[in-house]
Image (cartoon, rainbow, N blue to C red; front, top):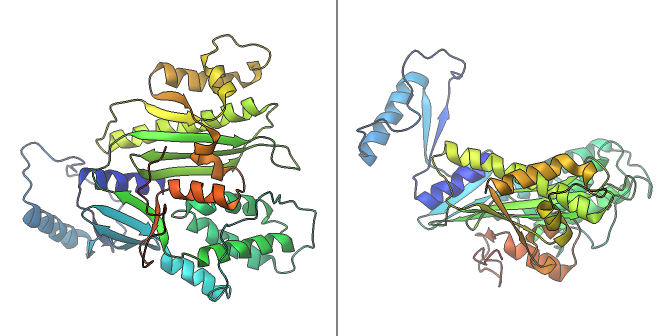
Length: 367
């Protein structure tokens, strides 16, 4: 999905015409003896009505395709495009989830999870119907492809699919009530945006009460378009908040490098290093310290990754105030005011709403 979001963001930035085809035949494993052009051959001139129509006809003769016209619906996602914007949402999918669970008439919740609520596998009683919980969390997990605002809570709920308890189902139902407030909300890709990556990295140190592992959260933008995000528990226990933040920086750096490879495949190359924002000064100081001492020698590999990418000018580490840290909402449950600020920076829109609330139009500056 990150590849798809990146392609759509680049397409809008470059003004590309995105069209949709459905291949009837399973031909991808066939042996091709002919030349296949992945880029336009030399001398090609763009006769845009004519050439595209001829290409579609050739493909139809060989593979029996269905011409679906301009991008509108794919993989359960709805696309609504104009010359200056593109919106991707899962409104029908979200409404189906609400209907299946009896929440179409529920009172909307203002946040997806109560602030400060810690999930565990001890309190409350075990559920009798495990499939109900697993099915719901699985569907909500797919909804995070266009709803990054529920990524943290779904990451938390996914940890208990083996032995869910009644409290976990209650929190999942709160997520449904949050979705009920705006089922048509989705990702917004503006046109003519800059081809420039910038990322935000954060962590919540030792937040898991059982394992004392930390949470990594990051989000990456192409211009003003949010194309990648993650909320995930770290593999190992960190001995300090600085270590947890630095491990999050390493994960974000690897994702940025992968995105740069993807952009290169699309024929796009940013002209400046990717700015990576972190609100932990100690973690930034580790990158600038070229001597591994007692406090950092056990995270040496992550240090080398970040240091090397800074040296190669792939990324540029920058400090940011905690109040402006966009990735904060991917690491913890936020109170309403903080959540609203986090939500406004994600660039989400609900084109089905009659008007856009203040700060929710997707046009806010990221930082």
